[in-house]
Length: 413
Image (cartoon, rainbow, N blue to C red; front, side, top):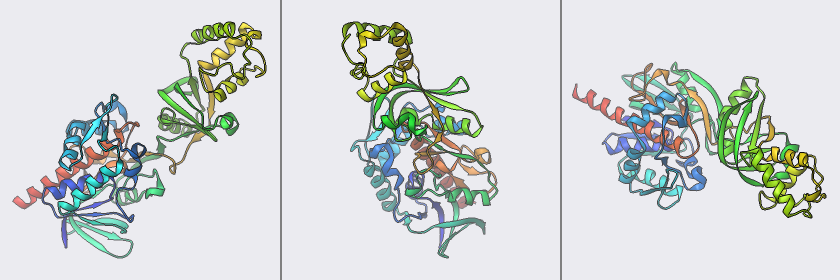
């Protein structure tokens, strides 16, 4: 059978494209190597699925930022929400612009996509690993590892990246596209925890803090974030810290030394005044408990010890220089960074197939006419907050629209 379109990869991009193409009346085949589609989608947004962000702008993207900017123009968040409304999925936005399904369940998003694709006539084939896609007879021949083959007039590769291999990521799409002459940018984990020497954070495992956090490289802050950090066994996690992973990975790859600077208070002078007045009010308070109420007890103890102050001392015995040392830490607590957690714990892949060889208005390959790509397999990654899924949806819907139009032009000839 000759399909109008074959879509390789049943993640967010693949399912969105399948719904759009089948909805346009195109004979569509979606092939997924896992036993079910959309597994990674279920884990997004802590199980709630942050669909998109109404405040998405190019500054929230990395890699081929100009391509992401064009995708936002052609398929903005509002258009994505209209698409999901057509699928029967109402959504709501929070005060930060993050959009979630009304049910607050990622499963609802997957169900809307999966059911709509099937209802519109898309054929979904799981447990089938495509190994190659090659031009043949004015279309494409896709060969599977088990010997099966499929023919289609158009092909869309949206197999994802390398992040979350337990959910099926393995880089198949990179190999397929590289075999057709495409090139890749270096691939690094993005939105991932940062590694520190274990002895620096082990005693703080499980502690959380609201702070300003900066990635400092050779005396210069590469990026800063505001939000919650979570101390782990051998590093620092939490969204604010994980947002720094991409910049950190690039710097370390270039041989530079990096450090995390956690600012529990922005101004060291204000921190000193707070501690000085607190010591005057609570002169008998043991330093073990001195910062309780400002930060968690364990974080407070760690700060006191880092400042070289004995935990058993009474607050009223501290000299001004000791209070200043503690205040300086509260305004700039520094940890050396030794690396970024691997792809097995990362949420997104930075890098991927270069967009220089794609038409951004259609997502069609410049090297192989009729071949399209979308989503994480391409060299675009976004910050946390719905931006990566916005890229997945927009690039897929742009590709599907272009595929449908090109098939229509072909039929008119």
